[in-house]
Image (cartoon, rainbow, N blue to C red; front, side):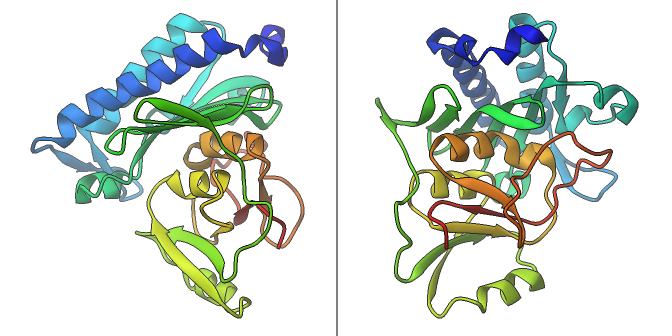
Length: 264
């Protein structure tokens, strides 16, 4: 485990390998997206498709080969006892298909999320949107980047808040708490978006803030959170200045949080 605490080892070769895993998982997802597919229902009544499972197996098998000593927590294999998980300092946290509802709707706003967590903090993350063919990646030691088409460019949060404030919100989940929160702004523009792309929009300066005042799980946010931190932004707990952390409690549900670029 100590090996991965050296951030210098998250180098160009390492980043390329993890990016390739996300892209490979995206290809498998797209092969299912482009045809009819089966939809199941999980115990929490959320949808599960064969694409979730195909991406899960692809990522887990590849990460296990590259980093055999680092444990993996995936949405599709989350039944790991807290007694075991609480001992982890470094681990992979993945969401094989973030935005399953967007996948089912076929609107393209879903992602593959891969994050490396160390000491409760996301130190590296990859977010790949296969329909858009856009790849976000970043970490403490490498900065934040976006690859689209044939170009890869550095990204960063906005230096100042726009007028009106640009607020990105969920396309499929809009809570009453969110509606109440928005009343604090005299003027704002709401940009609907699915999956972890919401946090990525803040990371690249296309939105000022993403308030998440509804349920999410740790695998929903970790990869994009790493990109946002590397881009100069923060994911802070609602009405506090404390950063969102991971694997600090038995429940894998996140508290309410605010992803932001410029400080409001």
